[in-house]
Length: 197
Image (cartoon, rainbow, N blue to C red):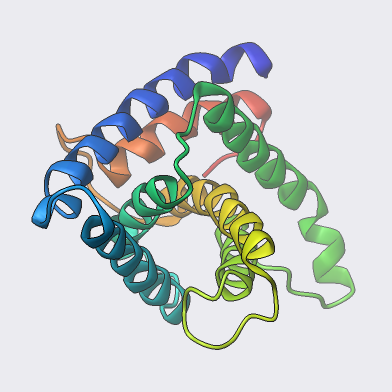
């Protein structure tokens, strides 16, 4: 599996570089560098965190843009970037969870427990991290440093949510690098692991 995910992780890294650049050139650049731009980045971060947290998962891809803008703003807020290794870890995690849930699905059904899909599980973790980072309203009792850790976790869960969500959406393929493209990268990895979409 490790060898299979590296080329896909490289494609995701390049794709997300484009997402960051476009966000920088449009959303974040409505004001020059400095405190006002920092405020715009924070606004974009909070707005999209709120949209995602308050939304149910859908199959039409409505959360694609908010997830992308959240990840871009969160990276800018923390002054970090997502490398190939980050994307590779996210890919491995999503594929492993799909495989695990496929194998355990019958056992869950026998005892009447509903765990949810990988996207549901990743969204629950994302929502909790966003809450702890105090991004979607409410109060966090964490100090500034701990809220930054929570924001880092929200990035972590957001990447995984994006990939799992792509697999659960019914979007027609196009020539764009969009949600359907993300799913097209994931499907062969799931097939190689013995799971399917």
